[in-house]
Image 1 (cartoon, helix red, strand yellow):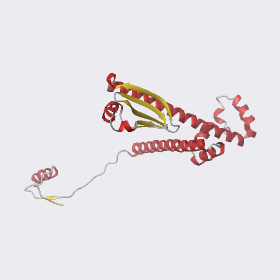
Image 2 (cartoon, rainbow, N blue to C red):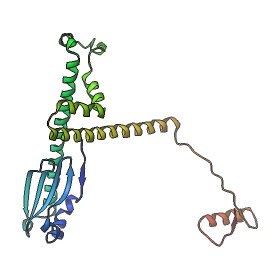
Image 3 (cartoon, helix red, strand yellow):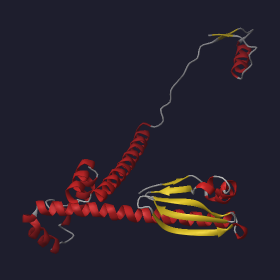
Image 4 (spheres, rainbow, N blue to C red):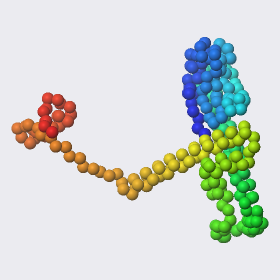
Length: 245
């Protein structure tokens, strides 16, 4: 899923409006946060009115808007409104991701069905007579979840599939951009999780390795205890102590 990128924190929105309402906000709205295809804008409706607007920047469509009278508002009220707007963007973006991902997966299912037309009746009969004892032994039956996960994450295969089933160039570009971003995000999370797990595994197996370091210096002193104290003073930063390395 996409992440939220914030440019102005919730508690700073009212302060930012008051700071920029006569300069930047006169010329254009300011982006508060982004999530997927959605952006949350801070708008100057008038000198005493602040506006929040969610827009789908890909479709250039306004999704939701709200206005606040500055005289009747405070930081907490506007901060809450911003938080709710960001949550709304996240929900909308997740719906878009799930819908587009499912559509691509449907194309994968169609592609597989076309290539396995002769097995359709056999698979249907086995699925209709499913029982828990033998379900894990049917290795010849397609594990759709594993298939889709593995096939979908192969970026080359997915791009080729989009080219095969979409003819509208506009939507083809939208789906390709989506697939690239989605797969890159999913695989980067997998890689990161694997790296963390591997590091933890090695740490548990080997433990924290201890190393011995030896530093050789010479210090002039009347006896061993005097030398020890002089060295401690030197290590503590007393530049009056002279040592030879």
